[in-house]
Length: 377
Image (cartoon, rainbow, N blue to C red):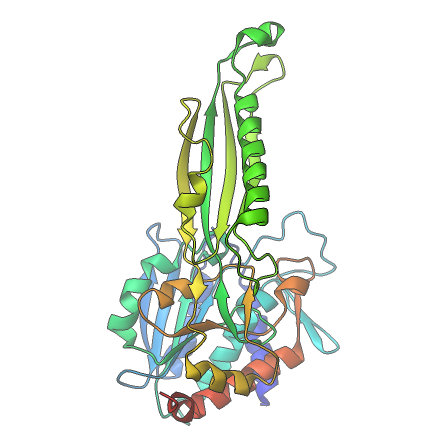
């Protein structure tokens, strides 16, 4: 079977598992675990605290070194999107395949599994490893339960490749993110007497305007990194909930907001510029993940960049799990097939077959040429 045919066949199976974020993923994990076991990988299964999900660490070869390829099993929901075909049944249309997760990021996982299957008959010179997580799409919630087991089980890889879609451009950085919930307090009362009561929605509205003003200040005079399309940290209020019925003054309201911050800035310092000490409000952190700031001066990246045959390196606006690997001292980058701008989280999400081919070729060349890539050390 031709490599690309093998990749598409694997991708068809992966897309068929409806692993929407925050929902179970065990069917996919079972299938991948059996797939890698047949390829003679050593595997460690890591269950989620709730037991409805799991991740995997898998390794072919012995000792330290080699490449760790990192992916997540979950996809975003299709709810409210107008698809022209079943999102969970892969469709091939000319030189594209369509289905939820093809770009973000089961296409990359399919390429890695196709490479993994060859290890038994053509063992690589250095270890080939895979990390597969859960619930990345809702704040990288799975990888914190896995990260402390990476080095003890896999050893210390030479490189970590996080395969989020970059159109195979080498990505050396992205912002970190913290998600917050603000509970705003008022007083319940009859709306006919509304002026006599504190309206929690008014508290929430005032707070949202403060986040908007802070965003303007960050854009005007905040720290900048012009490698990003939005070169400063951002504050965004995305959800507001409050009120029971129109004729009752709301006693509580809830605002969900986030800070996406440059790695040179502390989100707590940005948050401190908001009025969060009011008795009318309580703010809590929902989840967070670190940014990525890879050492651009490391000569290894010039060698890796030369293998991509596309412009780079770049930094991307979206978050990934890469910062978790970098924070335990592993040399980490983001590079993968597909376009997040064109296809990520979109209806009729798809990926060009040529992108899958380029990903497969890049990873095969990197795996076999790793010694020369690292020789610049």
